[in-house]
Image (cartoon, rainbow, N blue to C red):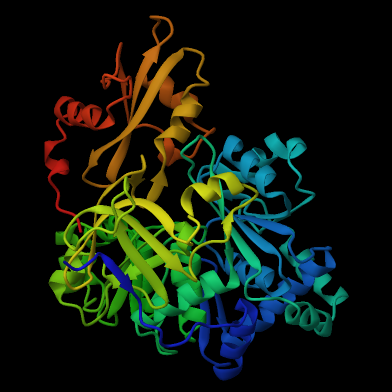
Length: 550
C-alpha cells in the first residue's frame, strides 16, 4: 500500500540570493515595468523607481542607527510605505516584525517586548483604531526607542518625510556594503501566530524561507512581468507580503493595493481599472465580492488566476470564482506561517474537481507526509493523520523560544502542523480537521487558549472554555462557555465589552453561554467536540455546519 508521503520537484533550483539582491536583479531587468500601485494613495512606482525608493528608506533607517539584526516593527494597514519598509529592512539586514493592525494594548505590548522592537513604523489611525493613543498607553513599558508615524489625512504630515531626508546622511555605497554582507539564511522577518498557551509565538523567517516561497507560488500562478496582482489581503500576514509582494517582485509583476483595508467595491474597481490578471483573498472576501450589488457592472475579463487561501474554501464559491470572475486558473494554497507559508498548491492545469476539492499537491523542494500522531508511523494513502512538512520553507524557530520550537519541529526537521489531512492516490491533499485546538475565523487563526487566558482576567469569570462554531460567512465564529464566580448580573455583552480595545476584534466571542458545568471525560478533560455539538443544536447552526469545504 502506498504511503502518504510526497516530495516536490527539484527544478527550478532554489534561489540563493537575498531579498534585496533579488529585487535589484528584477529592477535592472525590468526598470520601466510597473512595480507597485497604491490606489487609495494615488501612488505608482516602476521597478526602477521602487528600487530607488527602497534604497532611500533603507539609507534613512541606517542614518537612524538601525543595525543588522535590529528589530523594526510595522503596525499599519496596507499602503505603499508598508511594502517599502519590507524591502528596505531586508536590504540592511534588520528583522521586520509584523504587527497586526487589529492588535490592542495587551497584544501590542507583548509583541514589542517579546521581539525587542527598537524602532516602530506605524499608521496614526485606521478606521476606528487610534494607534497613537494605543501606543501611548504602553510606551513606558516597551523597548521601542522611536516611532515613525505615517501621514494621516486627519492629522496632517507624519514623520515619514523626515526619515527620507535622513537618507542623505548615508551614501549609496554604504548601503551596498551593508547589503553585500548579508546571507540568505539570516533571519529577516518575525510574524506572530496565536499561541496554544496564552501568548503568541514569533515565527522567525529568513530570506531563503520567504523569497523562495514567494517565487514558487508565483511560478505556480505562471506570473510574468505582464501580470498585475490585486492584493486586498493584509501585508502583516504571509498571504500579503509573501504570496503577494514577493511572488510579484521575483517575477517582475505589479503589486496592486486596492485600499488600506478590504472592501469589495475597491477590489472590483481596482481589478477593472488596473486590468488585474490575478486576485487574492480568503473565502469571505470572494463571497463579499461576488455578492456586491453591482458585481455584474464591472469588467473583470482581464482576470485569469489568483489564490484563495487562509481558511477552508467552500466548493460552490470556488466554482463561482471560476465561472463568474474569469479566474479559470485560480489556485488554492495550504500552509502556515511557520512554513513561510505554502506547502501545497493546486496548479492551473489541475482538473476543476481537484482545484475545488483539495489543497493541491506538494510544492517544489518541499516534503510532506501524513502520520499517525500517536505512533509516528506514515499512514497509507486515503487514511487521515497529522500532516508534517519539511524543507527550505520551515522557519528557523520561534523567536527566543527554543522550548516551543522543539514542540513543533522534530529532530529530523519535520514541522508538525497539527492539521489532520488525507493524501489521495495522486498525491492531492485534503485538510479534514485539526489536532491543535485552532479556530479559523475568516482567515484569522485563533487559538482558543489565548482567548481563554484573557477572559480569565475578568473579575467574575471562574472558568471559561472557548470553541469554534460554524458560521456561514466566516467559516467559524468564537463561542465562550463561561462559569461565573458570583451569580451577579454579568451578561454576554459585559463579557464582550471587557474584551473591546484590549484584544483584537476577531478574538472577541460572538456567542457567550453561561454554564454551571462543561462536558467532561471521565479523566476530567473538557470535551470540546461535545460542546460544539451542543452549541450547533442550541444556536440553530445546522445549516452552516453542512456547508461543504475543500
